[in-house]
Amino acid sequence: MNSAINILWFKRDLRLTDHRPLIQAIADGKPLLLLYIFEPELLADPHYAMRHWRFVWQSLEDLNQQLAPLNAKIQIAQGEALETLQQIYQRHPIVSIFSHEEIGLQLTFDRDLRIKAWCESEGIQWHESPCGGVIRAARDRRGWQRNWDRQIKRALLPAPTKAINSVQVNMTPYSPPPEWLEHHSAFQHGGERAAHHCLKSFFKERGQPYYKHISSPMLSRKSCSRLSPYLAWGNLSLAQAYNAAKNHAGQGEWERSMRAFRSRLHWHCHFMQKFESETSMQIRSMNAGYAEFPWRTDAQVNRDLERWKHGQTGVPLVDACMRALNATGYINFRMRAMLVSFLCHYLKIDWRLGAEHLASRFLDFEPGIHYPQMQMQAGVTGIHTLRIYNPTKQAQEQKQVDQFIQRWVPELSALPEQLRLTPWELTPMERLMLDSPLEYPEPIVDLQQAAKEARDLFWGWREREAVKLDGERILARHVMR
Image 1 (cartoon, rainbow, N blue to C red):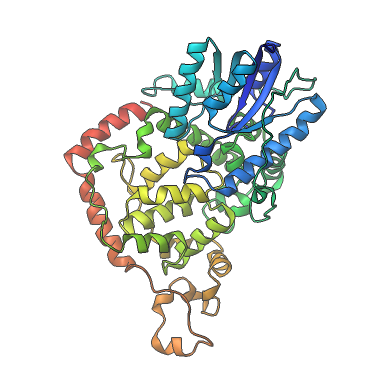
Image 2 (spheres, rainbow, N blue to C red):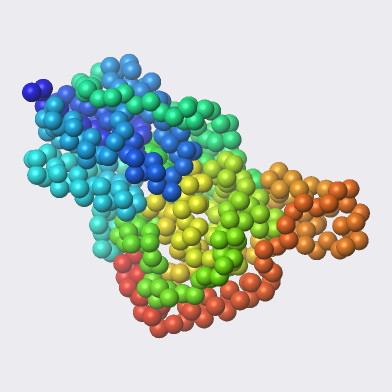
């Protein structure tokens, strides 16, 4: 039998710097297999799309380029994770597996339970390091802030600089689909070095007007950090981003922007902890009082859902945001909230019917943030302020919205600026004066009437005793007293 080895299992931690499992695995001294597994059940899961796997592949290529001078390489496999590890174990005794904890979907949680049971049966030590400031299986928030400070406000771990005692095992080489190898300039490029380039440009120049531009769908594309996909896939650790912001010697606008940015990094772990502490929110409302909420079930639900997914609702800002997201994998936070609000409040469509689509479009899809945010914006937690976003009001208030709409809804470019936000207000005479017929749909709903109905329904439901009762349970588990 071959000599015993350790395994470093990369998942959503595709970096070399500030990587605790990597440092621990190297320090252990045994021959080390660096491993990434493309799992069929994840590749087929509707939360993920080609854009995600292309980003992962780019990240792996970047890591292997950095590892080459260290005489190391990540071995890439495809297969069910437990079966892959078992096949390796048949040829090489595995002493230890090192990895980060994963705050993932139910299927990755179930997969980890199977692997944990197998490791225990075979006497393999599985060393898992915390994911940011999240506490595994925490039942409440006692000690949470102290843990966050300890995990995030610490000295960063350096990347390895000496040759790694790495090994390769007999395994069929993995060849990615050709689409993963294509470069798409509309999407951010994956990889640790791309992440650091993005980080530096934000703190050098782009981030100064961050607090002013964060809500604009147009200006946020440059002034927001754009670090979210690099944090989601682990090209950067949260500690790296926080330390960079904390050490930024800015004044005036810079100081205000850095405070706003650091607070959002704190929110990052706050929402992930919610999901870690209550993973059932992937499939049902965290507040049990909404179990019988009267979402639409009529024959037109699928038609309206498809129009929402493809940016054909007849509401310019909603459609521009969805089209931009579909085409680039990015839209800013406020507009994400508006998309969910439009789906759940104006169309009265169950948030679960839109969750997978948005996940598959967000290049920065992070399960632990996605589902708590979906429910909060949908208004089914019973503890958050209900926010019913008025798309027309948002379009009127945010900066450079007209340019944004012209970019993503070019059908409206021939209209006067004041009508590009509300094309349904065109009079018959104004339609006749257009050079060509307006090829843009009428609004899918009457915005004013739908908003009134949503306010009555959602606020009324929130007053139910069952909602209030479970709200107390939610506060006790997820809020720091």
